[in-house]
Image (cartoon, rainbow, N blue to C red; front, side, top):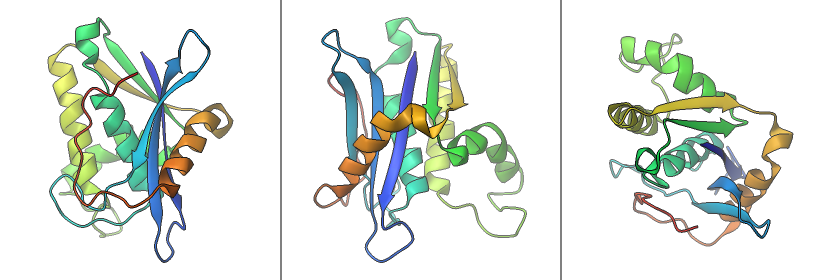
Length: 173
């Protein structure tokens, strides 16, 4: 199964940033895109206040994709997360190994940002492995992700963000 994910943050790194995430899960028979999206919550899974950033939104999109359906129960043995985010792909496939080894401290001596989401992602990947399913990460060119990017930006522009982490489980399509 292939799912495209993206995160966006309006005013990233500035005052009052607003972040959103989106998932593209193919097209309906009518040709309409199957998209799920939302605003990034202001609190992480542990309940701590978190900044609205594009990197956090990118990770949130991946976590939402993993909770979208019970993929192993639908007969899939591999779920490919396609994203234009180097941060997500490199982090998930390379950087987390050294972050864990060095107690979540980067080579610069700074703590790893978004540790709560990285730890949750690693937990989810391990759960999928227990079901005999692999999670793969594929970095795609930005132009292959325009539909998901537009949906993430639209979600970022929507109303107020929830102040509670929302566990995404089984979104309707």
